[in-house]
Image 1 (cartoon, helix red, strand yellow):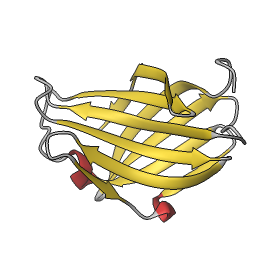
Image 2 (tube, one colour; image 1 turned 60 degrees about the horizontal axis):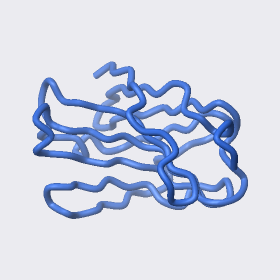
Image 3 (cartoon, one colour; image 1 turned 90 degrees about the vertical axis):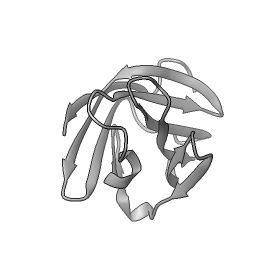
Image 4 (tube, helix red, strand yellow; image 1 turned 135 degrees about the vertical axis):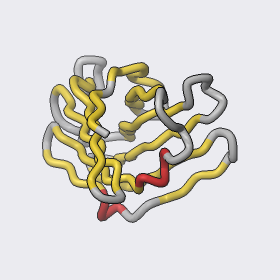
Length: 129
């Protein structure tokens, strides 16, 4: 995978019923070989509370859908039925509970990883909550 492949070009989130719907638009396609992760980093304004929500792919197929709480040191895995992807768009329907407690004024950015290394971080997220 080169640095020109699978760059995040637009990330948005919205609230639908009890779900936080995250849409990741990438420049290119989900890599067909190796590991690729897209996700969100959500934090309270002072960063004392942080969550990492992600969708992991291996060889082009979704294999993990999760939320990691930094302050609790726990990871919760979700049913892969909450993930859809086709070509250059990946959508994850995370439970809204994954970001509860962060409150107004929270900070949210997107990231991607390729083969276990940070690929992009601090990508702006368009919010419609």
